[in-house]
Image (cartoon, rainbow, N blue to C red; front, side, top):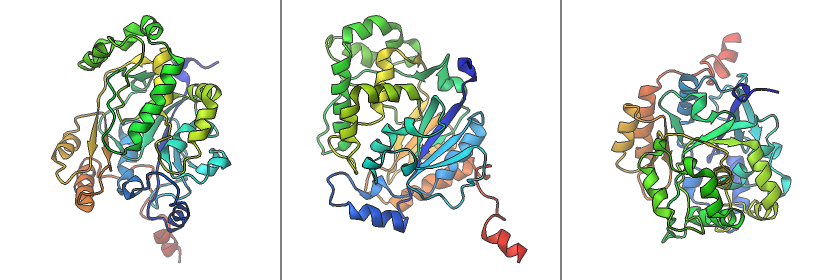
Length: 347
């Protein structure tokens, strides 16, 4: 049996090419389905290569990178690299849920990916690594590293499927876990010096003794045990099955955070300091640009959340900053002589 420190850690990266004509044709067939099909859910920010450059420079210890996609692959990605494994939705998502255009459905089925390690880290395509990451930043003694923060979850004034999803997950958590028992068992993991000021949020919520109020999501690379997904599916399979039939994001969604909260409730995690930051593409990206160029955080998320901004300008600014700190191609990118240029030389 492998010791915990010897268990390989895989990365799972989700990506969609919103410009793929075949994908668009299939997506348009289902547009009458209820759900969130806004353009910002699918458009390509054209900066995924910087995530891979960050992995090479700051997390070279990764065992495998499972690149999850509908079927399309970036033209620059070197799929022959031994660390890269391209995984199509049809290879692991049950056929009754396909086709899906809902990232929540994709994420809830990650444990079905063939050959995925028991310990894995979920990356969305809007995450970037700016500083050195150690294995211990994700797993220690076989347990995921995480930051426990309970806070009062407020309802959104907008018809936002994300807030509905969080409420649905919270209902399941409160169904299966009694707060007094969890607090008694995990009090030293729920309140920890590494959390800093986040402890005040949790302390505030301790006065609500019977139910959990909600949990802070960091929109960052998330460490998971595959067995957690398997356990949650075995207990709440009916609810998950229902949610996985949602082709687009809807108010009845569940998401991978259910598995994260489950790990927190059972104490299957080790406390860690949060060194991440969440940003949104804006007309004024100065704070995000400053974070990138000065490499202030280990991991940042730059989320495409708004449709009313000058997206092309915002994307250009962010990508120029990323190219400044990652100017060289990684081993995961094709060489200049790959493809057309290589064939041309042979001729």
